[in-house]
Length: 182
View 1 (cartoon, rainbow, N blue to C red):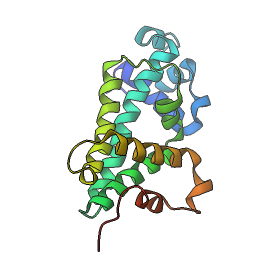
View 2 (view 1 turned 45 degrees about the vertical axis):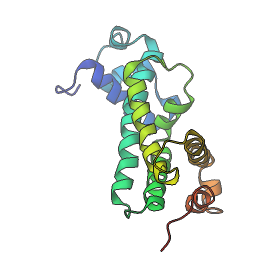
View 3 (view 1 turned 90 degrees about the vertical axis):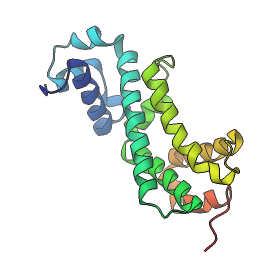
């Protein structure tokens, strides 16, 4: 175990690693304990079974997801379409590069939606998308526009490489919001 991490954090980090390496099937409580270098009973002490570990991992994954979107946004030209596209590209990068985490965040049925950390981290990720949409809605949040962009990028992430060559996401986004004038 990494001495600088608490046992709980070591288990979360181990779970993150297992999901990145082996996808959703790669994570079990025993494997997380072994990877963290702790007793196989440790996860039961820190989490309410696998659902508790899934929830903690999803919370941490949402933080990494937000960082991926912000990183791409920071590197984009300071134009509304370019910034929103960069946010979406960060979304797609994360879905592609961290498929196991993405699965836990969005498809794991046993997450605890009442967990305050999970709620805060997922709201922070959504706020990045909301901020990217604001220039296209007159500076006022528009849940319909946000839902359209979110469902498009999320669907695109789930479809993966099969659609990427046919229609780059920039072309999809340009059908939703107007591209910046040159």
